[in-house]
Length: 283
Image (tube, rainbow, N blue to C red; front, side):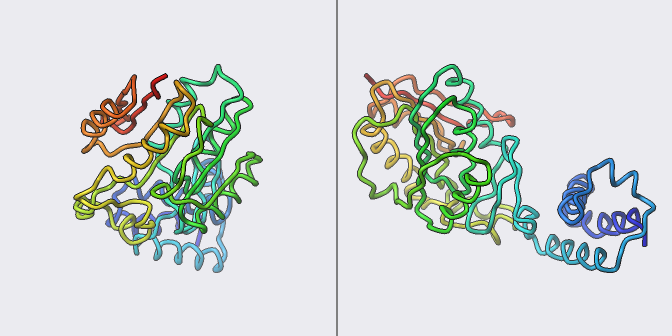
């Protein structure tokens, strides 16, 4: 069997489940994960023979993909903001929408230095690490309720040489310090339980539910806690940045405007949905 044959076989098996375009993308990632092959390598080496070992490994990956296991978990790796992050089923897979949140923060604060930043519900550490690497001389703290998530985040920060202070903590019960931070950011759980019916199987079956879902009767639970915490922990004029559920964007904006925040803004993602919010603590 040649490399071209192996690739064609994997695509044929994956296409009915994922569609042609996504199947092609998954096979590219699979070959990069298994052999380190780039897109150019796949063309140049197309007629090279492949070992039975590689065939077996590729078959295993395809079977796991057909069982809806995310490819990022299969290879314990995800791309985010130009970085390779280790991811496990203990943390969410970083999404492009979260990169947009980082972009917003960097765009509005890149000219400032020595900022003190807190990332709440850090997960893999993707936001905290990206900000530590892109905000000049920033001091970054990060918290998460999951000790396993904090372990992953610490590993990622060490690999990427980002100096971040991590702590296992529950934002619903954490006592805030007084006027410490310039920026607080969070991508907390925000998907209502009733939305599960529309979620893809790879999310439902494999990503950590505690990092995703909130009760239908209390969809802003974490935002209320984060807001109360941030009003005490931010310096006067400090900024709050949030990834949000578009379904509750207006409700959240109204809540922030009525509860100690000014310059409340909603920001659209690349799909034109309100996916981010920012606000400033009143002086």
